[in-house]
Image (tube, rainbow, N blue to C red; front, side, top):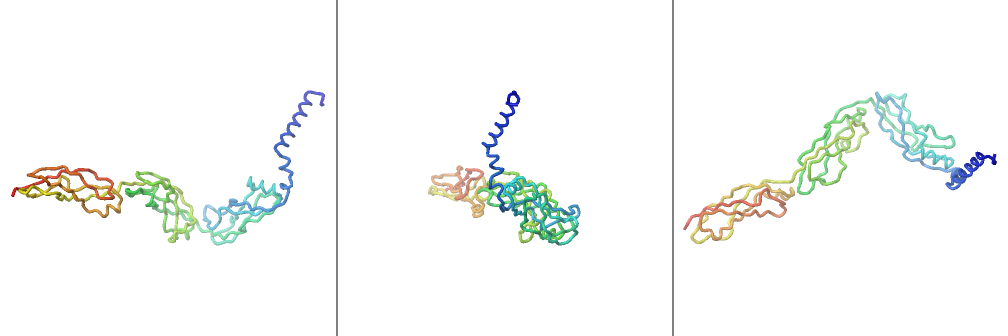
Length: 311
């Protein structure tokens, strides 16, 4: 065979394959002492497959995942952990309404491995399935509203969710909240996606099904503002033969902007009108002097009309 061209090609192929396997330590991985050695290991967060009458019953108390403690050849353990080619079942298919303590079962695990579910069993409750619509309340942290702004309002779309559970759980519902995950401070209207939390009166999360499980929250914010009166006051001294009869402003109110705690402490703003050298009726443009903490006013100047009389 070696004398033929195809025979030489076949031998070359075999040699190349052996060299590839040797370089990549395939034989070492398959037949090393560590791979064949028996060991113990815990495979964490294995999903639980619950089997029950899902059309008519609601199951509560069953964990979503469990840990599985396995012992056997290390290579077989690593394969089981990597491929997850087995499953953990909680079989309640012949159960009706009631409370049960059921053991988990492992299906499809290699015969080379011994396994134990941690915990071995679960305390569960089966109830008649009930569905009901509930309104949603948006929960917006005030720390998200930027300084100088305030929350004007919020709407949730859709405004209701359908909650499915046993009647016992539904009776515990005190709050259905749309919880926002974003942390950036808000200075403009925005829409954010929010998850739904269903809580009892002690703010414990309830084991229920929620449809839909996310909603859109429309948030409206505006700059904090307040309208205050303008109060003209005199500054300086008029001429000796002139009396100041009255001072009127062309605007009696102004909207000011700033943080709410500052604005709440302001009822009016004094407008100093300089009457020095006034020798008769006149008008003056006066700049507003804003109190500390006020960021801005809707206008900067007012017109002051000065009415006089002579001694």
